[in-house]
Amino acid sequence: MSEIKSVGTMQLIDNYDALKYYPTGVEGDLAPMLHGEHLSSHAMIIPPGFYPPHSHPMELLIICVKGSCDIFQGDGSVRGVMNPGSVALVPPNAEIGQEIHGPEPCQILVMVAPTVRTREEFVAMLDKASV
Image 1: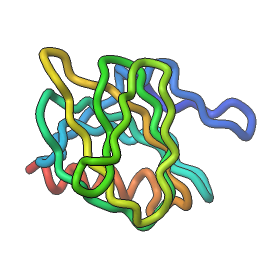
Image 2: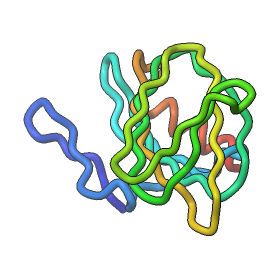
Image 3: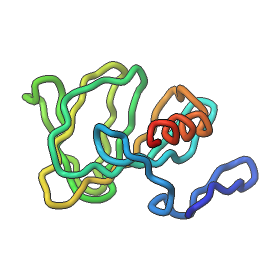
Image 4: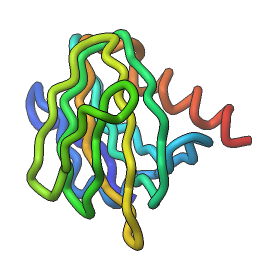
C-alpha cells in the first residue's frame, strides 16, 4: 500500500493506485489522498453506469486519468466528455452527474477547495461507513 511521505514541508504519494479504496455506496470507490490547510484530494474509480446530478458546497477540480465518462449538469442537456488528460472545474453548488459507458470504469482525481475535513477525519468516516 502506498503511504504518504513527508518531503520537507511537502506531502508525497508514490502511487495513488496503491492507496486503500473505500466503497462510496453511490458512485464507485474512493481513496483519500492528500489534505492540506485549504485543499484536499481523493481518487475515485467509477464503474459503468448513470450517476444522477448532485452538488457539493465547495469547488472541485476533476482530472480524468483512465477510462472516459460524460460529465453533465442538471437534466443532462449540458454535457461534456472526459477522457484521460481532461480536466473539469466545477463551481461550488453546481449540480453535476456522470455517465460511464462501459465496459471499463472511469478513474478520476478530485481536488476539493476549501477542504472540509482532515484526511484522518475522512478516513474515519469512510471506515465507519464500510462496516
